[in-house]
Figure 1: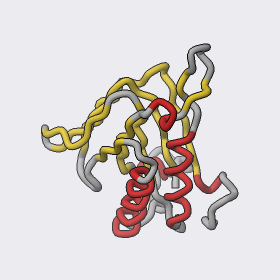
Figure 2 (figure 1 turned 90 degrees about the horizontal axis):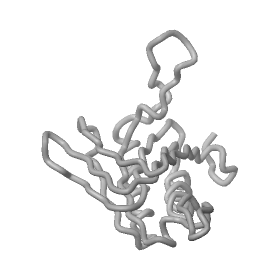
Figure 3 (figure 1 turned 180 degrees about the vertical axis):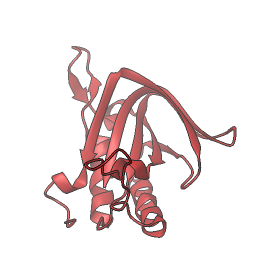
Figure 4 (figure 1 turned 120 degrees about the vertical axis):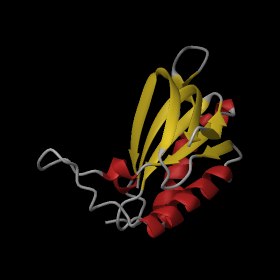
Length: 154
């Protein structure tokens, strides 16, 4: 499972012109589920996201997490993070989990993020979404649960 985190001052996601999720200061998390991902991948990414120290303290150092600043999370499912671009000019999405499996793991990711106590908003699974992001910094970090060494994914 992959997650692209963007530190934001505010963000929103709309479907067919209607805002379905909106946050203030915090993180936008674009999350992609790959074949072979498990609940452990979703749990790991939720905890890592909430605890990652990418907010500046009073000295300007990255010492604070979303938990520390009581930030907000906007979680958006995005299978295109699983794209394989090694061959040709068209990305392949064969490594992306099928929609039913991806939806289940994305829902677990959302549940685990909510367990942190942070405000969590989401996009709409499998919808065409317009995401408005006010990236602060800009700060953008990629997380991959398979690189953690703590999950069972192959």
